Image (cartoon, rainbow, N blue to C red; front, side, top):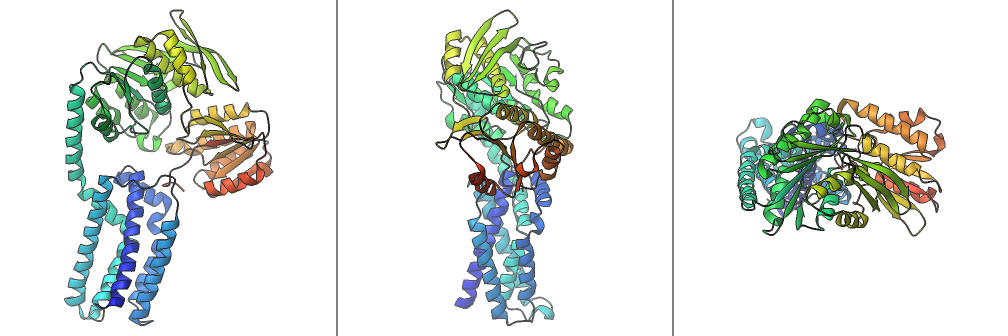
Length: 535
């Protein structure tokens, strides 16, 4: 093989590796679950994207007789260079994290690619039918690479499937290590937190409050999967930790139980049961059953803390442990409620009232009913673990806003930013719109792509969000196409001024638009920020 062929093959080979990187990236954003990735492939159109169709055309050209083989190869390399540049310049909100698992998948993809190319050359190029003897090994190698670029998604899926036993063995080893660490700390108080939304904020608030008295470890970021919890215990747990706050996420039945069987919490908080991830849960009954796996797993002397503001929390009886229920908007049947809630530029003043007549007056920098609700849950745990009123008051007063969760900032130019970009949901988005509607100076602007993973209710719930926007806000910037029609229909069902409705294709386009229309005194709400796997 001459230098010309080698250069062409290297160029196209690099492009193939970039295709694998893209597919593995999307697999990572879909939790390496083949079923979810397959749905994304079909929903996004990536399986028949422009790039893949261009590769199909180049593949046919390569084996045609329209041009000289060398010219066809040069064209193929040129197309690969152009598409590689486009892929390298593309920006992602959540870049690929090169974990050991990603490296294993990448390696297996490469092994499959080499094996496929060799098989084509050996069987077709030398021992195949006479029709193929006209093609050189270089042509067949280049054709194999283009074929793999077209079907790189299939190679990525095959690699994940082949690695399943390996991943299972690695995960079992890590899980056993985490269980051993927890078993060596019998005095450790373990608090589990789950819910359709609100669990991450509640975790942060509880960590800050309990840190007044205890040495506390919490699962960081969104480490709310079994492997995230395992990694937290193995890498961050210290012998002197006194409390472990474990956030528990779920997208299907049994997810919470799997974590509980490992960490064995003594206290469990259910912050909400709502229509999140209905696409995978299929029904609200399944969402409720999954979230209450935490309460069902508690020991007989454990404690369940449940948010009665949500119907699917309030209507779920708890008989296996003591349960304390709390609320802000629905105080009926609650053991603790938030009363005298007053918002101001400095934050919020409110009182936590117990059914026994106890009252704890608090001030926080946070705003929004959802944040007050999450604080009440944290305060209840603190009271049960023996913190004094002054310790709780001091901690609540010093709690910083959690990034991307109704986080209020003010720019030097006099514009207020309300950042609620993380994981928008029907209840949270309604509260965020309500908070924005209370700002009276300047224009009240929302930038949103809508809400996702709501199953059959997605269109209706996004239309309802659009209606709320149209009734309460001044300017709406709808990002992307995923929920565009539902949001716009909801907005147009009100008396909203059409000239203040803006539709853009990307978040970057929304920033360009805002640069033109923002003025001092305006307030911008960023409500939800879809991952890269959504268009």
